[in-house]
Image 1 (cartoon, rainbow, N blue to C red):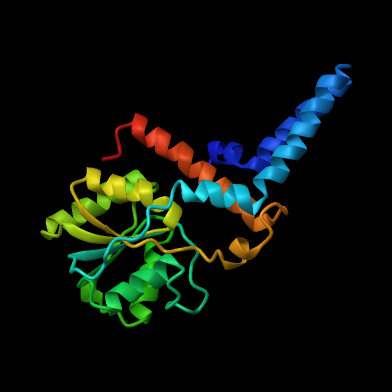
Image 2 (image 1 turned 135 degrees about the horizontal axis):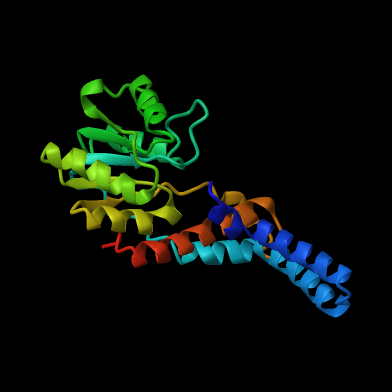
Length: 233
C-alpha cells in the first residue's frame, strides 16, 4: 500500500483533520479547531456506517454475466481474501475460479498478480487442477499490468475469450482493462461476504463498513486515474 492508499482511507483523513484541529488550538483559533474536530468525528462516523458503505458499493458492482457459455480461459486476479483451508468458497476469488474450472467453463485456469499468483496456483494444483491446465502470471503489480501481461500470455496461445474473476467492486475497472487489451470478457465477480453488513443497522458504525467504504473510495479514485491514463476500454 502506497501513501495515496493511506490518504484515501477515511480513518487517516479523520486523523489528519484531528491533528490540524489540535494545531489550530495551539495557534489560538478555537472556533476553527472545534469545527475541524467535529468534521473529523462526523466523517469517521459516517464512513463507518453500512448505509454509506453499501451505497458506494452499489455504484461499482456491475453484476454477473451469463457464465454458461464456453470460454478459452478463466483468469483469477490476486489481491483478494485467500482461502483458509477451504478452496471451494465462491465468496473468494480463488473459490470462484476453482468452481468455474470444475464446472468446465474453460480448460485453462490462470492466476495473475505478483502478490498471490504463485500461492493461488499452488492451491489450485492441490485442489486437483493439473499442471497442463494452469498458467501463472506473477510479474504484474496493478490491474493495468494484470490485463497487459495476462493478455500477452493468452494471445500467444491463441486464447481470447476469458471468464474474469475478481472482487465485485473491482470488476468494473478490471474488466475494462482486459477489454482494452483485446480480450472478450465474461464477468464472474466473487461477492464478498456481506451478510452481516447488509443485516446490520444502517446507521450504527461498524469496522467492516469502514473497511468497505475505504475500498470503494480507492476504486473510485483508481477509475478516475485509469481514465486519465487511457487504460480503460
